[in-house]
Image (cartoon, rainbow, N blue to C red; front, side):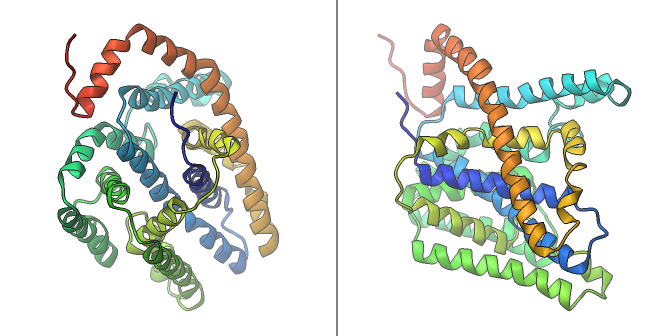
Length: 355
């Protein structure tokens, strides 16, 4: 029997994905002709998206680091990804034949900029190298681990934040760096006091950057067009806010709540559905009304729409889980139990003795 996951982290997983959905709502549904006040609020709501991405990856890394890496888990991620590419691609092919070609359908399976979403491509890549990253983290002492993370912080976050030049930073390398941070937190812990300061400091910096950009630099297009520059997932304030919030939730003491854990199961599916190449355009063209009123209505409608989208898509994914994934993987693990056991042992560096 699998151990029940902590509901504090699962609740954070839900929040992280909702922040991502809210980010996409503001990015794709915003009409671009609203008042300055509505635009400012829209930019503020956008800030949480990349924080959500960083947190989601930290959570995945934390769970992978705190337990055995299983081949079945890796295959489940691949199955879920290609399941939605296939199903959503077929639905679009049947409903929108004039705007959908066989080439579009094939591209939806490929880990390219025109195929799978960038997040999915980087996330799958991180998952595939997770066994080796885990072995590396297990071999390091705390002082060695700190030195490695400091170097990684400078290369992957600090320098790109200050210069805007990515150098070796890309989606895949950034996710691997976040995975190593999660491994450190899992192995050595992290000060809650420092975490709170990181979250508050990073969050306030991001909010201040938007207000400064809107209020002071509104007449300077070169600056105004980059108001959300610091909201990129690799920047120092976003990293600090993400790490801080993750550590705060990790230290929360709340009972295991089945409802939260069940709803959190659909979080990755929510991303795969709403960021599918063919769904995105159809979905967001119906939410322009969110930005048609005042500030209060904008916030309320945006939050309500985000919650509704998350819950509906979670329901869809839970149906997929019960109807397709659980029966399929139950059958595979029954038929190939020895293969899965040996694969899991190899991934975790465990020697299997033949009896």
